[in-house]
Length: 577
Image 1: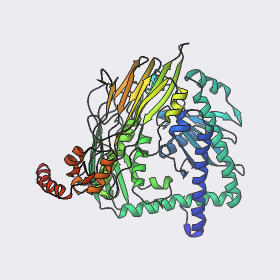
Image 2 (image 1 turned 90 degrees about the vertical axis):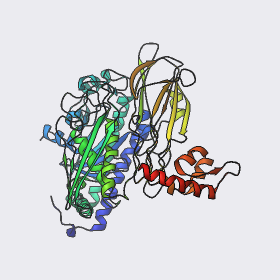
Image 3 (image 1 turned 120 degrees about the vertical axis):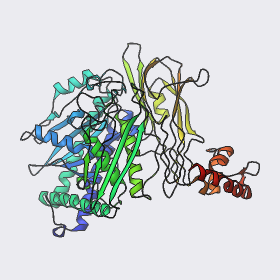
Image 4 (image 1 turned 90 degrees about the horizontal axis):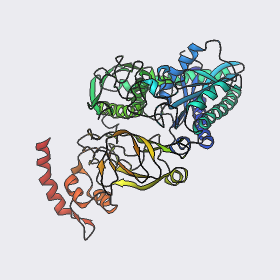
């Protein structure tokens, strides 16, 4: 529905947009405070949003990583329950073939009725600690079909007319490990009820019809701003290819290829040339492939663009059925996070050709994630979810921040050790692992876990064979590595594994660093010195990667020696190039 903005007050439109975002943030804080698992209270692997009665996104908060893919799930629910959506209902869905991401990402959403009319969906997505299946944590990379991955829920009523569906709650309880999953799902219901109340208050202020009109106007405005931005891009075809090391079953690299066609005020994002869907669970749905394209293109727009479905309208997505990013039943997808993060890097590689000053170099490859299943005396499994994240690539105008990821946080060591039979022996930066550049990438991160009980572990990492790339002459970062018992046998482990460990074993993982941006020989020598003094670089690394000579006794840059060395290094570098 096109809306003439002239009929509406633009100031009020901005106020409404901010109010919708605030409601989403309130839902997020509710999840954080009411949830039980570390996913909700520590890692924040969750998102909130508001959709309209057609399933279009009209509001997002500051944490909306999962939300770009939710409209498809909303629309599937609307089709299934046409004429049967009532005030007091709360829905649940996690089925990837109903347009969800993977089964641990449980979507719970409440239809919001205003003046007796269904008007909005209040949407929450939380990555659950466990959703059943063959491995603790429901995240095994080597599941070969969807049936191995856990409890699969199509759109269903979790609450009907305000009354919990006890049969469904019982089915979920009997199929998951531990009680945290149900606790977090109840927190999602609580968050949606809070949003229901605040949306009704907002409608009382403006009137239902006028509030809906402002939501339509916001979508139209987002579309116009995105189209104007695209129109300023040079017409043409831009392509980029990146790789996942392997799927954990077959040794072959997995290819992600993107061709972006810019024509006028619209683009076509074409994934043709991407590998076929894998035997392992790296696959993603078409809904997520669309969300990845929308999110990447939105990320190079200005902050003034409201985050809603209007952003999607100028973007057409093509993905051949049966490829990695348009999986067909019964393909598995539990470890789809590896693919999602690699798609982000592939998108940055494409967009760097269109808006060179607008994107960073490649990050560490996304979260390195462990699902620990500690075996208790009664043979039950206590599931712990931990991840390492925070090594972005260098930016066109600044260094990457060390240890700072986007959308996710790392698990507090103190809370981990208090709640689980594990000890974190080491957690910190890995010196010299950054991608060198005029603006360097972030350092890789090392984390070591000592098992205090026998445990099953599903572990997922990447960027070992294909390190994070640099841009504009920046260097790639060092790759990731994983070792067993680093103090004695120091045995190298695969990047993806599904294995058992004994009490006393130590698992050591180092993420890749972030790629560098720009020529390292153009980096300010004083910044190199600061990194050396902070023990992020050695003097040897400063010399070899940046052409900076450090006088270690004086703790200063030897300016003359640095100039000579850089003059010598530049011809060698140009010859290699």
